[in-house]
Image (cartoon, rainbow, N blue to C red; front, side, top):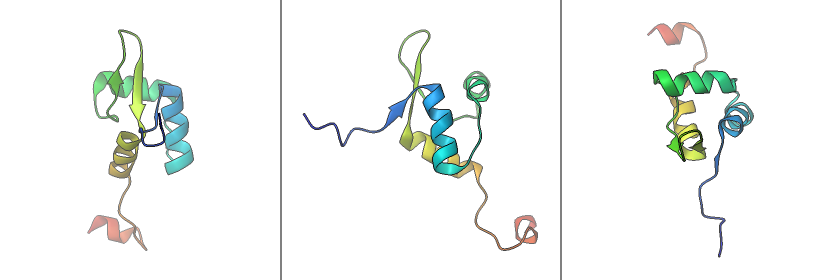
Length: 79
């Protein structure tokens, strides 16, 4: 069976590292855990009562939503 087409998926620790390595976003494991409870964080899958997994596609979409558009000056952000 070829697993190359299955989405990348991992634990909270993996998600924290993925966000840093791929997007330069430094979200600690504890922060991601808090966002799971409060809301506003990346989508995740519940595996059982104590374990969750994050999909790379969901992390990519969430990371993109956290970043501003590309600008050449901070004054462009106020517009």
